[in-house]
Length: 114
Length: 114
Image 1 (cartoon, each protein chain N blue to C red):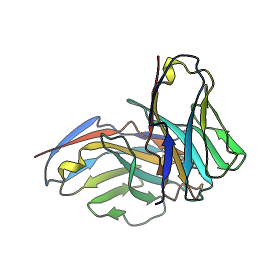
Image 2 (tube, each protein chain N blue to C red):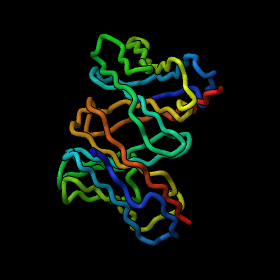
Image 3 (tube, each protein chain N blue to C red):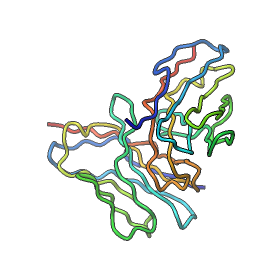
């Protein structure tokens, strides 16, 4: 069965430094997509970045990049130059055969310190 | 503005009192889902819909009902709420069921069942 594992319940980082949030996944499908979402304390889910299983290059969106290692089944999120506003819960997710379904990890709470 | 709206945003109710959480999207999306978020578990899919009058169970459908009579609306119904349904609920929509497109999430509904 498909599964997403986020092994870091909490992380902290100094402002302006880079941080990596870990995500490993398990699937027997050859075609799948991986997503990262940010959830600030206000509760909404904010889409950050997407990586398709057939994409050869790592996805990047501004300060966010996804370190995709297919053989290791990992899809780590890298946030460069952390800002105080990056403090939030971060979820890794994988689509599961379509039909608008995402499988989520348990999340990592990131705290950015000044 | 493209958005998914949910109402109410906050609800406190008592065991057994039927309630409905509404969800509406203005993007003409075919696919819609309901998720619940619980600490340590991430988000889990309750029900999804591929189009009008087409719905199916997700991973945790027990105690919930849905309907899709119009493309834009996808209400979540709790016929007899119980305390274990206390959770944060999200409605989501997307234009493509393959998962390769971004899912748009509503702002969330925080439900407490006493």
